[in-house]
Amino acid sequence: MNRKLKEKINEALSSVLPITIIVFLLSVTFVPIPIGTTVMFLAGAVMLIVGMGFFSLGADMAMMPMGEGLGAQFFKIHKLWIIIILSFLMGFLITVAEPDLQVLARQVPSIPNMTLIGTIALGVGIFLVVAILRILFRIALSKMLFFFYLLLFALAAFAPKDFIPVAFDSGGVTTGPITVPFIMAMGLGLAAVRSDRNSQEDSFGLISLCSIGPILAVLLLGIVFDPQDNSYASVVEPVVETTRDVAIQYVLHCPEYIKEVLMALIPICIFFLIFQLITKRYAKVQLIRIAVGFVYTLVGLVLFLTGVNVGFIPVGHLLGAQIGASDYPWALIPLGMVIGYYIVNAEPAVHVLNKQVEEVTNGAISQKAMRLALSIGIACSLALSMIRILTGISIFWLLIPGYAIALAITFYVPKIFTGIAFDSGGVASGPMTSTFLLPFAMGACESYGGDVLTDAFGIVAMVAMTPLITIQIMGLIYARKAVAAQKANDVKPCGSELFGGGQDTGA
Figure 1 (cartoon, helix red, strand yellow):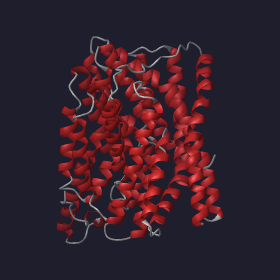
Figure 2 (cartoon, rainbow, N blue to C red):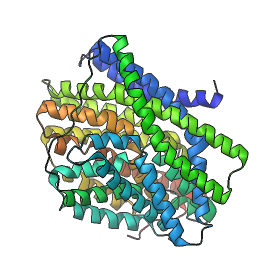
Figure 3 (cartoon, rainbow, N blue to C red):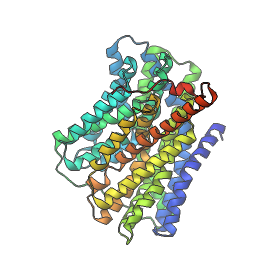
Figure 4 (cartoon, helix red, strand yellow):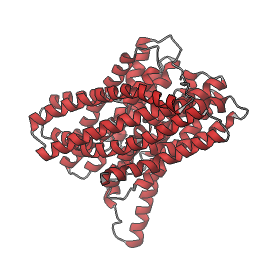
């Protein structure tokens, strides 16, 4: 086996194993699960691990070099309208390509799938343009975040009540395993060409702005479309009694995900080929490496999506439903925290973000620190989501204070942490959230007797919100340690460049 592939699979194993063990222990203790469904879940976990390994290697070989090359090329284009068109096209194409967006679209039958997907893709395309222009014109990220989040919550006041959680969820599912490596690499490419004092800080923030676009677009769609159908697509648990039944489920669904991934990657491949023909940026050896990386990405995403959709959705829904209907529904809160703490490490895009942060900051922010801050944030978000299900409180009572705190902290942390934090929110809410946590919340809400559209939906939005706070708190701690070290040694501390950009007080 390829040494790097083996390393990636081992990393994936350490990420997926904890959540697999938790679910397995629950199935043999408090929440009995049919043996066929358990086998299907374990088979899905194996596919998840191998798929994450292939995808991570593929992203390193193909998606990252492509994104960096495109970002670097933008500074060589002297016509602004060409940059705008290219940015919009890339944002639109990679969003339509996001597989977990299909999962959300299928849960909202009041609006046709392609209408919802097209609206979300339009929002990402427009806001990728905004994000690129921000870097080119060196506009403070915090200023844009304040403005657009104020606009977002003002617009939400006019949207249909049942549609608001879906709109906020759409901002999380768009930044998944295809979008994140490409967009983050574009930011790094732009920063590498600029090479000024604030370039590394500005390399982050693209994901955060691209997460706002879909929310605004879907809120506008809700106001115009005015969906009246309050139904949703409930999870149908397949009947599996033997290992043969399990194999049949995977064989039947695998072609569907091959088709989805091919439809996702082909437009990106075509765009890249046109880009290469025009710019001649990559040598033959690099092109071969990128082609092999595309194959790894294809194989990895097919295995990953088949595993989570076939193996994880039924188990997530069943666990939530049985606990919600039990005599101890309050157990959803601590259980949600434990699942949330570990499940974020199974998100493929999280590994990409953590690695990029460690590299850009020269190790000042380690992958371990990022994982801990994200895990704590997601654990808190799951606890709040379960409280929403049990109490039925409006999502606004959590989102408005949460975003207010996150935006207020931006005045006190080094600017790079603001970009990393707001990017982390979008990255953490990937396919594992939409294929395990959302069904888990829906099952719990259904059995407890709540309103699924207002109480269960919104869990993706909660997952996307809490890292904004925990990552910035980590930034405050790092900044204080850096200042303390400087005072103690009367020399510049290691990684001082990270904190030397000053505080972004412009809002």
